[in-house]
Amino acid sequence: MGKIKENSTNNINRQYIHECDLTYAVCKIGGRWKLLILDKLKDGKLRFSELKKAILGITERMLTLQLRELEKEGLVKRTVHAEVPPRVDYELTNIARELIPIWSVLSDWGGKHRKLIQEQEISEE
Image (cartoon, rainbow, N blue to C red):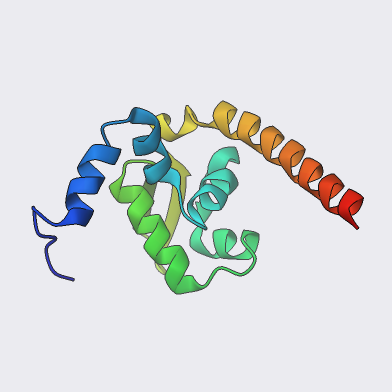
């Protein structure tokens, strides 16, 4: 993948969007799989295979890519143990653990919103 041009519209928009701390935070944890991965790690360390089993529908490639991004962003810590065969654990970093109460509130909101939408759809039938 090539380097993004500094004066490209995409890069300029990214700079403006990331001036807002809320948008910046959502960009770091946003996406289809990141919140699920972070949520599964909230109770402690997991191995790759345990994460894969815990998240239905995610491919190994996608899990690998998402874990790499989360590690790069400082949200997940990857520990390689010098064993044969090698063992790798993933866990939340301290900064990621600060998000757990926020996820809980956001999850509650999601449940309320989902119920509201379902009730609206039923009443429209």
